[in-house]
Length: 250
Ligand SMILES: *Cc1c(COP(=O)(O)O)cnc(C)c1O
Image 1: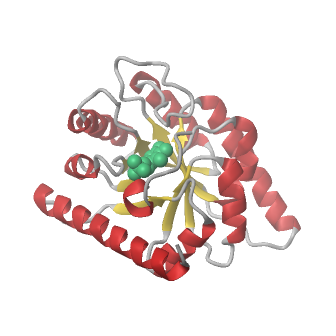
Image 2: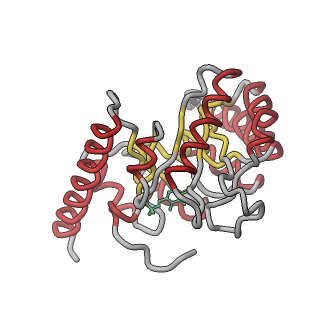
């Protein structure tokens, strides 16, 4: 497929997704549309460039090995990158060089790694005469699957247990380098997405009692964006319905 054809395909897909979001917002009686994050994992930097030309400014990636080089290739575009995959502490240093947000914060040791990485990143920037960067938005990833504490690795279905969130929120909020943005979740495979996202909404409401500005709710993928919008999602993470089917399951 050449670039012109690909551009047409992406534009058509994007339009259908935007229409679905608008319709879901209307059905839910909401006044504001959630933010669309297009998940570009598996797809080349050239697709990100085409989508940016269509007005998309927020992108999601789930592996540093892939996202790092892609972000470097797109430095001139400077899109907003959301890191949405399971993250090892030793990758924090690389991720904070390009990511504006980490949506998969699921344990206190990762918070420490991110805070340290941000501090070092500021020092690095100062040493090469770059301006300092904004603080890193952190979303607490919640495990919504009551039947499954140990989600399979790489499934994107990890997350902290709801009872551990308050402690996790506290350590994020204490760091001068991090901003507690809100919560993120993936609907469990076997469960009803609407019910799962309603639980997430309750968890978010509870979090905002202690942290009133942590209002973000990142929920909703290609298959369940309508349910997420109905439950009050502020950020949707849409991959395959914009870019097409991914080659294999990672
Ligand atoms: C891949 C991925 C998405 C996008 O999923 P689609 O079904 O392709 O829309 C959203 N969130 C996370 C955490 C992902 O890993």
